[in-house]
Image: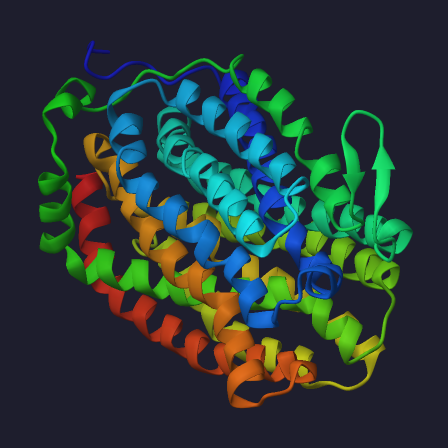
Length: 439
């Protein structure tokens, strides 16, 4: 094999790399999802509305996360040491999560959440590019699905741990800890869940930076203008995929963030009941969904389907809207919780396949920065607007925080069908690109 095309790393080494990156991604979603179970205590302490609180989950996090993910993070991930970049980011966001546990105002919490977004901007562009250099195309769908399981494992862990904290100390106004001093009940979750991520950053340093494949030597001559030019030339795929996945992300973010508040307000469950119904379901069903989507995409590709990955994304989008509407409109708590399993399976089902599709037809020298642009759009629209769009409907349009479920329903009723239409439009160009890449 030529020097320009190094051999694939040993399978055991690739598996370990994907595992470590997945654990880092778990902590990423633990740290960003803590807020979901703390809506009530933070609102009571800081005197903010649902919409203002949603900005901490959306705008404060998403702007720096996405802009830095394109530049300079995406550029560094295409040219520099991706492992070191990701490890530094894990350490930073873990530190800033702990800082969230020391602030005492809305403005301070907003700034700390911006810091979390700065750190988390590093992981996904670097990880996508590393996995593509660790794993051959035939196994890439399941590898990216395994990495992306971190989303659902992280949310599940965050919900369960934070639920325990809220149940135990959420009603306590102030506690006094040695060395740290005064701690409010809602701050405990940040102080517990932030620091362990710093150890994960050290573990990540034990992963070897993989050799860049294909035309690695040419990456230093690639400019963002070249990346944008490729995206424009194949906009039938890139634009439709990016905006289609953005609509799926918007729906998922609205669902994932507001499920706890909906169950607490409408079904009058306790924080502990929410934590140990929603948390385990997200942990299991969300993880199985994204892994199943990646495995199915790999099988269909092996069977010769040129648009296998986008078929998986499309079927997930078609099923999403009806399940969201049913889960948030049912007034029977038992049935609503039972529906969370298929709902969370379907919300996760498309994402591993969508990531694999992007890597499948993007040349190595463009891969990290194309991934960063992909993440910029889907996170600005999906994370930045998802939870806020739902709370805007309930707070501003309906003027009733008890109707947050109606806000989520409205978001899904628009975004899920739009996602399906955009992904369907992406399929012809994607088939052509995959056939070209294979030839």
